[in-house]
Length: 124
Image (cartoon, rainbow, N blue to C red; front, side):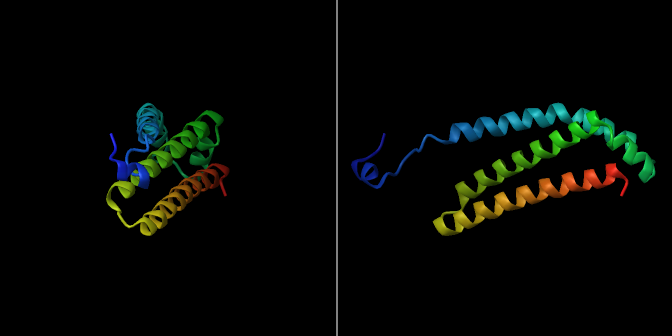
């Protein structure tokens, strides 16, 4: 329900929060399911030298599990931080800058993590 002034200014519910809500829940469930294999991989890596770690991380199933976990957790982090920014930053230009910085940071973290896993798995 909007007031006439709200209709003129286009203020009120944009009805766009439900999609982000469900995306965050889906990424949370995906991370919950992926954490068990990721912990298994971490326990396999304990006490190994670089060659042993490269051999484990170089296998396709392990690499896919790690890649899925990195992408899912970075996406979940981005959505969660964006919700906080949208709710608590009231200056529109500062909000836009913060959301852009959040997107950049999330992509950077994901790419750096993928690069680190790739470098470790290739043994370089």
